[in-house]
Length: 114
Image (tube, rainbow, N blue to C red; front, side, top):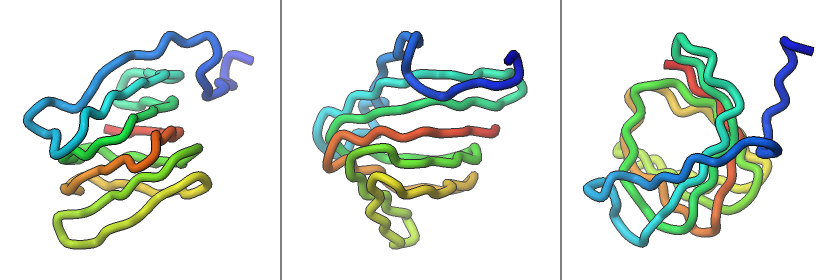
């Protein structure tokens, strides 16, 4: 089915990355991203994984996240802090500023809309 796209890691080579050094607060977090959808026009979907560490985040895009495994703490500059773990789903909206701290290697499914 050309219009049905499974989102997973099978058959996709992960992109390796890390937060910019000036954003890292603690640890040495590393990312792996399996992009299943890059439709153009600012729509992306796939699987993302991060190893323990903490870094500053600043969202200019809208992102839906569903945590598949691990534990992370997302803290907004407004003082709101959320611990997320497997089974949790949430949206980070444009303008969100704060930090993401991975306590246990975290894997999430995501959909991003610019």
